[in-house]
Length: 144
Image (cartoon, rainbow, N blue to C red; front, side, top):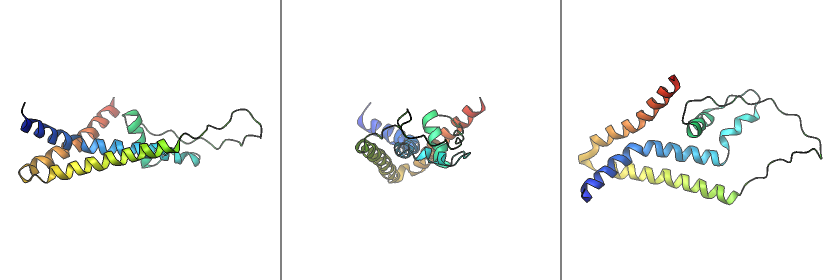
């Protein structure tokens, strides 16, 4: 395999997987800040688009988010069961920056691939296939 063939494979693989990489990078950033769980503050709520995307990210399937439980009674002071300590904010921001950078690098790669005039038609075909195939696979998984 020579360098030209390797670049061509890299180009098409990058265009094909870019939609999925961007999806997982963005939903990962949302999960770092627990935005997928914010609907749980409303009793009986099923969750919006962020909660659904999070389920695809975590479960690799179209599984509805859990219905928010009814509000729990406030604990009396001195009751056992301390609330969970918040984890490091430094790492949260580092992970968020990594996710945003990954999505940005993928977008930049798409822009570079798009700017090859001789490959523009194949760019759109490959991008569309990379966008549609994961949706079809999720739908097939939901039928079983």
